[in-house]
Length: 88
Image (cartoon, rainbow, N blue to C red):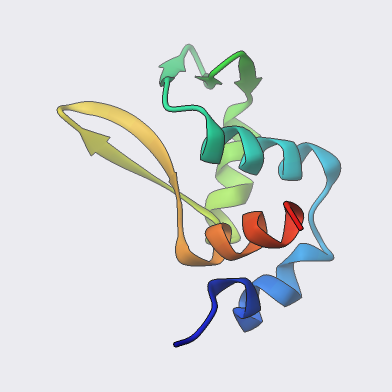
């Protein structure tokens, strides 16, 4: 079985992440309470700017989906692989 931490796109992308992007990925993975606030996102106790979330979406690390009609941010497979590498 293929380990998601060894995903080739994750290995490539992890070197290009800024500290803010890494913290945002950790927050999205950890906190279940997420909501859109104004032009950004409130994820747990962190505020993420709309620009930061858009960059993570362009890198295909995060996707916006709707659960029970509410927008939430979820990690993609590549985002999960990067999170696994960051936690090692």
